Image (cartoon, rainbow, N blue to C red):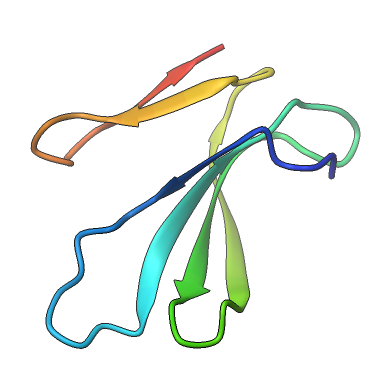
Length: 75
């Protein structure tokens, strides 16, 4: 996977939540397919649990809706 182009942190902490969702947009090639979601540990900085959430070509910008129910991407 090529290095991530843009990172969008879910910064709405709930209580003492240690993990927050991290949405990552990638340029697509043979090893990357679009937008991924990871778990980001705010205590250690560790990123884990990679999940493909949308197969899109060369997404270059991510933005949440104001109510954070939707994630918009520019491709």
